[in-house]
Image (cartoon, rainbow over all chains, first blue to last red; front, top):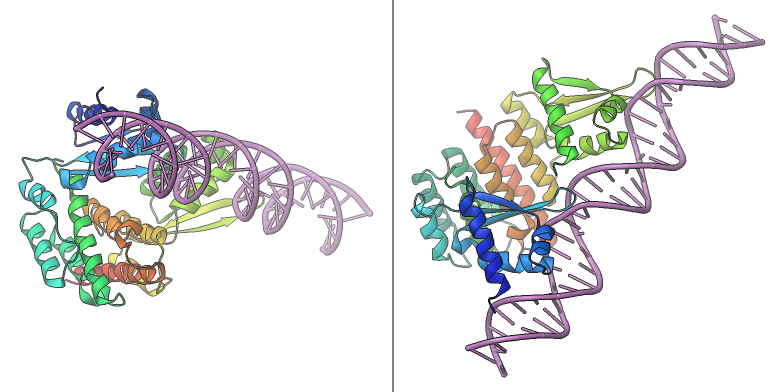
Length: 157
Length: 157
DNA sequence: TGGTTTAAAGGTCAAAGAAAGTCAAAGGCA
DNA sequence: TGCCTTTGACTTTCTTTGACCTTTAAACCA
């Protein structure tokens, strides 16, 4: 018996292929219904198959008119981004390394000078003061990762 | 299904765009009637979408000849930024309020969608997990302030 | 003229409804 | 046995609706 999760995975990937643009919207409950499974299985598929290391980014909204939106990074065009995403940055990151990553993004034209400037400040020791040092490097790593992650959204636009 | 609240939101924003001047007047009941919804839904839209942090201000009057007047912050960039900074921005900031400030920056064209998306993630609970809650709101306030400060610098260049 | 009533606004709040998220337990298979 | 998968109960978030409240201008009347 083929695993249901695999079927759902390829179903979503097919949607992404067929669709123009780099994202698709799904309704979690509707999809679950279509495959006759628990809604939370959709989450399982998303969490295990559509991770950012694999080049996916997910946004969602609850409540009436809610949705799950799945973005896919363009692998060819943004090779720098894909490379970085698959690389897996560490769980801790000092200020200098963080700056270097941001410089890279600027050089690749993935962010503009304004964003670069803002983000440099955001991950600086100054702004992150108030967190103790060890935690600070955790947070910084998280922030830089989330920057890369978010950029998936803006590939092939 | 498109959300009614979103439709009403963009309807009002369009009114603001079309209109000369920095405000529009609406009749709550009339608008509710136009969209076939409960009058209180108009309040819901105003409370969730036209907040101070997003750069809006609302005045209203009851009784005969009553109205709701919606002001949009002037596009004088520098003053918008300083205003926000100097006014209610406290030392602690929850996720939702931070999001609202970023929405305001986007609407004022002070940051683009890319930066908006990135920063939204950066100040999200998810990314800031690992800091305990109280400290988290401190850091978030710091981050948002530093974004505004950096932008002021950019405006003066 | 000046107080009183009435109708016409808008405001508040809580409940119902509509999604999606979380987490732990149960089930299968190498 | 240990790691994926599957399921389901419970939670959180966002939207819509409706019943009831407050304010105010205008009309009415002594």
